[in-house]
Length: 354
Image (cartoon, rainbow, N blue to C red; front, side, top):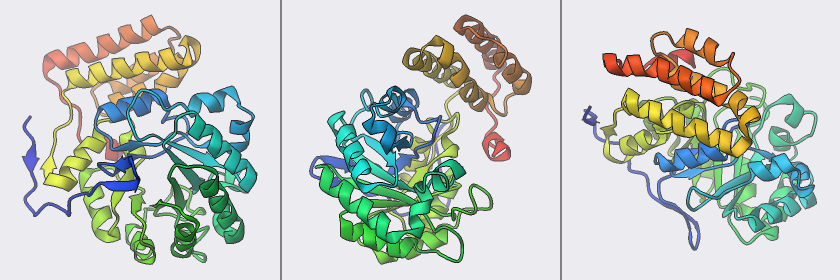
């Protein structure tokens, strides 16, 4: 299917963002850090499919400096081109600084600091993530410590505030800029909202007006039209996409084409999607090992197949098998008849499921 031009004038094109000499985000359509999702195989695939920047899963700084095996695996950055970004979370400035040094030594070109994670274990149990938006003094100490510790650009991801009575993201963004942070990403929700309600892209404009550094809009970007509207309302320099990439590692490329040229690129054909899924599946097994990989891949298989005829039964079958051979046979048996019948993936399936 040929790319379609939008009927209205295209949105303001994306401009490259240079964070430091030699560290440039050529196309600021960014894959969000997502625990259990943006492992190395997914990040490599997203980059290969046209994503401008990928960020690692959130890594606990204390675990990183203990050189915890799982944390070291999460911080790997090889195999998808520069620049590479690793996200750290924690509440102690010195520990965050040490963790930042370690991930830079392991190849990270950008260190991202998490002030946005809303989950209870992190924000309440560890006083990290979005809890730091309630303690601007400690937040500033962490930002300063990490910026001083490493020779690479440091970025920040946060929310609008802890709740709607404390929407302090503009003020904290100014503090971050003064500490040497080079870019800030805003998820348009408060901590107390968790992932409910809708993202407030218009609020992000207040952050954009408060600082001179680049601002990235995040939250609820599920279609190319969402991306354009998020930029229109926020004035942001780019967008970060999270669950909109579930089962669609090609989606950031479509967003970039729409924002830059007004083009609506078609989804890959079902045959191409099957090939991408197989490549992703095998990479997961290679990276995590067969026993862990088979289980971890199940959610990805479910996302890829969403909206296709018979997908519910297919997912149930995949969740019951424990070997790669069985899983790949099920994938072939599911996709091949649909491809031969000329079935196309349902364009609205993602938004309906989300």
